[in-house]
Image 1 (cartoon, each protein chain N blue to C red):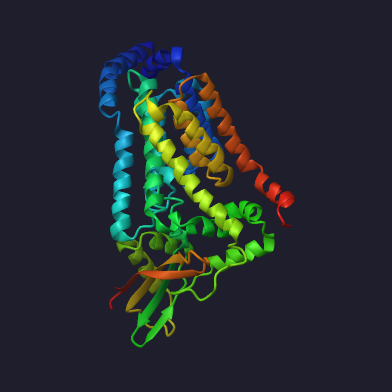
Image 2 (cartoon, each protein chain N blue to C red):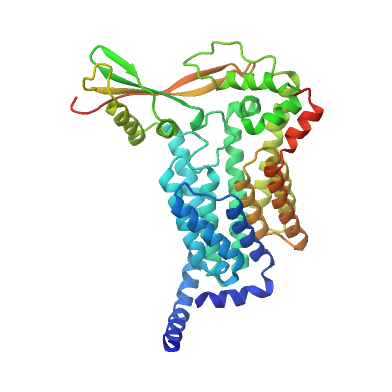
Length: 294
Length: 156
């Protein structure tokens, strides 16, 4: 089999490369994708088999098949798929190309660095261009009305559960035309405003820093802090915004280009930290004990 | 059997240099794909009112204007009569996320197929798409009319 040659060539220095492949497949198993059942089954089967069998994991055909299925998923549901559904396609293509390359580790590391840098650069530009993000309105609305942020809002705003839930319903109510209420002054209090302001600028700062570090020429200036910046971003952002599929994809890309065993272990650690965030309602637990409210 | 196996291996080894050469030429393909689709998403946002959250441009968590937060009204229009019809959520969200051409027409066709109040034929369907707005001081919700179209349906 042609892929056997690739496999043998990879083995001596396959640390970062193999870790990135395994994290990607594990992410597919832990957060299956697919509204089309047969595609979902195909991707799950390939992910499981790839984790168990190295030749399958190192076959460019396996990754091309995954890329084709993920691309079909995006196209069939367009324009609704989440952004990480697109990123997954690019990453699967990157792995397939790397496995056919003479220097797979170098090639995958380069694509991983560029994809992480560009994704975070685009995310930063969109936020900078949005007035309602810059003035804190986005975080204010999100904290109050997005169920994923409910416990965080209870905690930082020191708000009882029922008051916050009522405010969330008020924000969700559709109004044709101009506002016909006075807003939610009892919830949009000084504490929540201050937190929204901090979250706004911290998000811009950390996303911009990751983008800069990953797009900067390797080994110089901000580039030396790229692993730490990405790990900090994932460990903090996804503690609240439970979009674990995106987080795991970024971590797999980060692992592909990680400089050294220590950073690779850190990527694995944060990968499982994100799993912890998903499985354990730690913010709710904290809000119940510290906040005002039951 | 073993002869076939050796043949396949020879064929694969002959293909390997070509595959490596192709992979070398396409090495930046993932980056090119990302930038092309992000560029297309930006254009659709600017010209077609696509929600910045959608379309692969990585504008998520930057605005309250997510496709699912938009609101769509659809009305059957007959001479002298206009009746609002509730549209299935998936159809409405898709059209609200990108309120152009085929998605709005899809809504219009579905609405036209529903029985009208007097069981007469529907001449056209009027569709309004609103995007959410919030007052920065009070977070009071409001909305802004993003698109309003009337689409002729059926024989009418």
